[in-house]
Image (cartoon, rainbow, N blue to C red):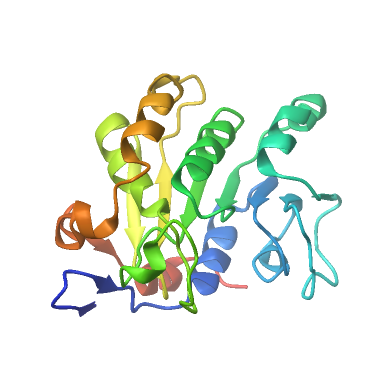
Length: 233
């Protein structure tokens, strides 16, 4: 793991696409939910039925898929969850990948909405929660090539308010992958705290919070080890 004098760390393990692929092989979900599909690069890793949500699709990779059903919803994630589509099908995702709008309040809502609809033993993965410099973690995207926004805040939020969750932060390049298990679809703790969290954390920057403090709050899990232990193709 590469360290920086500023306190930032760079996830230097295998690509998050490789870890996502291993998660699909390991979990073999009956239904996969993806928020933020855009080009289809991550969606192409799905091995069964899927639901993909993005306000502006620009699919380049999704040529075929092995499942029986693939549903594309060209709308915001808030609109999708409000539509009641999942409830109407009677199906619950076994795996969800959340990579939507890179502002923490959006990811917080996506996590709450996804958790409430996950099936038993479901797993949720969050992308871009480990910025390696301050510019990429700003709420407004500047001229930086990579932009994670401030979704890093989900890590301390979940650590503090949801100790019941199993949270692993994998060193998947370039900005980590947070894998969350032991979900509780009945929990309303985050929903009750959301208004205060949005008000109190909106203006908190990664510099103000402290990169060293953030990275000291977890131990990196090895993406390479997980990939090596996952079932083969």
